[in-house]
Image (cartoon, rainbow, N blue to C red; front, side):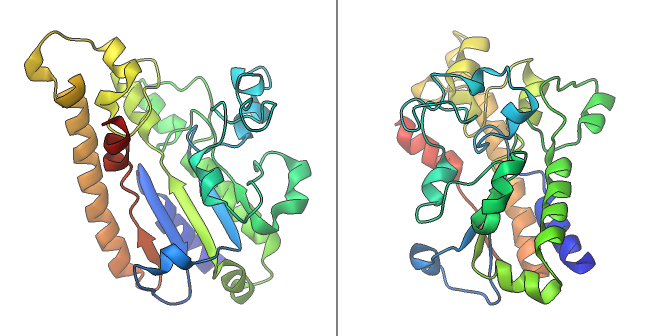
Length: 264
């Protein structure tokens, strides 16, 4: 498993907003994503994709009570939403991903696992602390989630070949994650991700009457430029990763443009 874990670490430790990893034995064409059937889905990330890990850390969290979950589940599941998350839609045909910290759900883990934790960061909490940036909500940053991934696959794989067989039709969703790192630099709240200059919480916190600081829909130009710069750097890193691992299909999920389309 050592080589497999090294590959996972390389794939997952990018400071990333949006990476979709489809692990298959051979490269496939762009149309395959439209018709592929996944036997299992594995998710890492933060509140955008957490299906309940955070409330296992903090049962008193607001996410553990209504209105969270009321429009679909009729009870709070730990999702930071009143209904479904994006990963729930990706999981069509596959059971909803159980949170990794729900040990009772591990017996049903054949279809995947959710390692995402609300409020988590990409950078380890101790790295952020050295920069006087404190995350008081959780210490389950991406490196901790990667440790969970390693532990999980060491538990279900007998050897490298067995693991490759189990993963050949699996979808890995890595992120989005990284928005909380950025938010902590700007303020003590979590404005989220995507074009962060368009989010209501950003517009409320950093409201300005300076038209030069705004773009279409009165979004904050500087914050959106920051997101665009980050995404450009991420794309460059993914190109290098594709060259290093030609047998891994890596698809960039352009959440920025998707959000702008919905916002429009």
